[in-house]
Image (tube, rainbow, N blue to C red; front, side, top):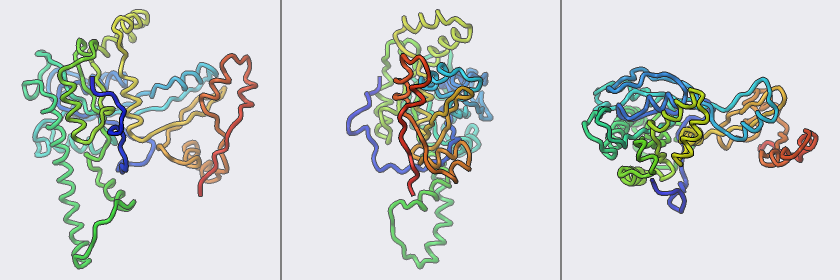
Length: 362
């Protein structure tokens, strides 16, 4: 399996985020044809998008959402059992497969690349399984070559965008008499880059699709090569998630058939876990999103906000008036709340829990 996260080299510093700052962000499934994009999309969202054994089975992007799994949300729902329950959701888009030369119009060409521009982060699905029955556009299995193909086409698309931008910026430089200097990335500069929707500035999670045999034994000859490529191209070991569509489909089939006992036994005998929950939560985090809970007898709801926003902006997710007239927020950490609930026979101690004030910073 890929190297474990940790260590000084696994911490990115001074990173500028160029993505859109809002709560309704999307992750797109990207990769060559026949690598498992549509199958993964169906597993994550419980949809029935076509997933066939030929290139460009997907033409127009499929969009759906999947609930973000969270034991805290499950605990709150089980505690109150309200009539209305709203988890946090991740928007996922299944995008048609890309091939070499897409930036010059091969395959679905620029139509495909514009679909990638419309999402905010990418699940880059990499094929790391041998199967003669599943066609490969290059007739052989080589994950590093495939990674280079995708990266090259995305870079070429961005270069086309930048070439057009340079023409307009040259006029500004000429007007200034050719006198200008390089400055750090000021907020205004970041906003300009953000407006370009450059594909290569989007956060990426690399999903390595293994055979079920390799996934069960937690070993593949391709994983070290993929890990080396990712880390030498600016990624981190934690950006790689090995999984198996074949394994996940077996688990999903038993779940769909209501065979809960068989599913539990299969997972216990396999001694590995499903990776779907991790894929969803990592995608949600990669987009710079977080959420908080409001809970009671009538409703449990997760409110999604950009990570790092202040309490007034978080309150605005519920209603704009809450942000404009914000005074303070009384909050309780989940762990404190959970500890009070354990063994308690009434809601009295919970309602009396000590809260802390979160005031706006002006």
